[in-house]
Image 1 (cartoon, rainbow, N blue to C red):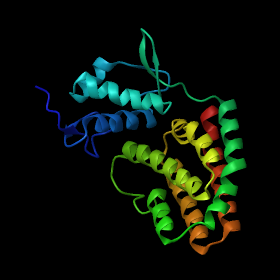
Image 2: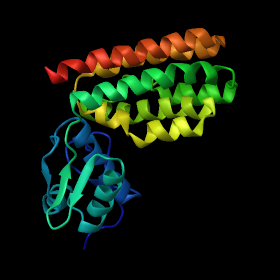
Image 3: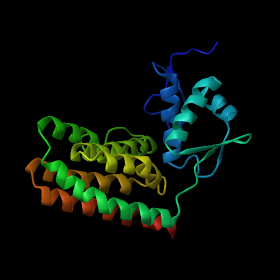
Length: 232
């Protein structure tokens, strides 16, 4: 009988080994998410539930729950009578549009958020930025997947503190960070972004709205430039 108390340890999530713990569906989600972000599951490829059942040694139910969650995040597509596929890679046009949108909205939001920050909110942003745990763990694929999520949370928290829910919802709905991180699996993407997060945090800590706006603009422009080679 399948043990319902399984989990993924930190070194196993991207390799497909599931071990004991609390939330099975959540752990299966993390394992598949890591494979999608590190391109072990290539964009557009078929995702077979039976294969994942064998790979993770779990039942169909947590696999389907995890795939449903990934579908909601735009990373997996389900087609009637066909099954699941990894979402196709974003096009160059979509990429350009996403970065144009981000440059219009996020630098101004960073400036606005500066005035609303207190020590508790600043601590929340420091934790979300991923700077404190930047070299934790030996599994590069897992670190990359974790940073993709941290980056999304960091930017979302800035939008929350800027107190414009329409802008926040607009950016969140695009699942921007997950899609752009799938363009290129490379440690440079995370290490340079973490340096830029530190610059944004420094501006926040100084209460300098202008510096926060500039640091966010540089971060987004550099992110765009780092990922452009994926289209060459």
